[in-house]
Image (cartoon, rainbow, N blue to C red):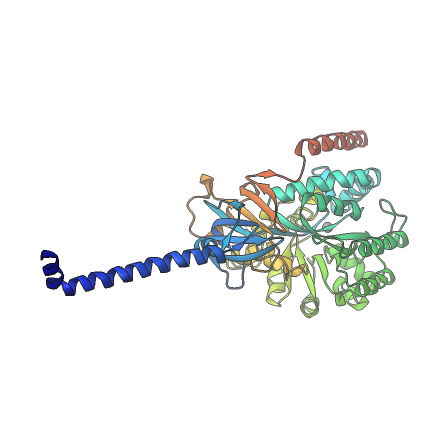
Length: 487
Ligand SMILES: [Zn+2]
């Protein structure tokens, strides 16, 4: 009775309860089914890396707060918020990003890696004294394959530690350098040097150029992280005929060319005396600017006409502020070059004229010296300096379609920078911090082509104690000669 009565009396509310239960059950089932669906449709990634700030260096200058990057093989699968990545991907390997910036690795657009072994050997000298009394004689005496092996290992160590993931190298025995780069895990454009004079391993132009052709053809397509290139030293050390021969060969082989160009006033004077023109117009007349990609280091003295010419060609200008300041070469007109649409990257130059391979220092100098040089505190803002060391840097060296940004389809080349140190607090603008406060000691993680090269500040691909020992032995020999020469 009571039951019947209850049913009778509460028929409407019972029906309501039943309907509500059905709705709830349906809702829970939907959530459950959606979760199952999400689990089953999640894509596998090899690695997921997180960042409290993900600086993508995309065109829209996007910085994702609490973001992540999913990586598969050597490429970036996705860049998004932590939640979006976790909803779409799963991976057994994850790198935490608490209080860290995740960003593209830095790009050193011009260096001579093995010169690390000449770091601090001779400073505060006139350029010609420095070259003729120290660099050239010491290169003649010491540069061999073993020197290159140890020197480029030291350079790779320093670059990985400091967050560089791609570099452009120009030094002797490029095949030895390339082998070391393959081992340490970095990405590089490796230039085979050619010069008209005797150099380590060569009598002059003919054998150095033949060896360069051999290097380029051997390494083209051989390794995903190595791009072989031609590296004629400069327009004042290589004759026009030889530069022409090289330009034609490089075009035929579709290989980049790197060269020191318009670095000093004395170079401009020499070229003017010999050929009655500027270094840039001189190499343009030879056809060097028509190359698939010309990487021109320094460009301290291009004229307005030169800059107009450069803006029409596929060239990248590499600005080396530390080296230009230390050797008193001058200050490159970077603001004008950027205004004309010339792609500008940053480089350290060799450690003999810097004296380190620290790209954070180059970024900061680039952001500072052009302000005073142009009497304009708005010149080279932080994002431009950062772009020259990342995205624009890769565009300047011809690798802008594969690296320099955190973007799906691009190579997984990235670094994490720690914000733990108290000297980095407070943080209001992450881009400003990257250029004006952070330095190489804050880099904790390095990943190139999806492979982790450094984790929590520990380099995983190199043997530190063996390298230290090798450097101690070779630097002792160099020291003995330096001491002997002084007496
Ligand atoms: Zn150089």
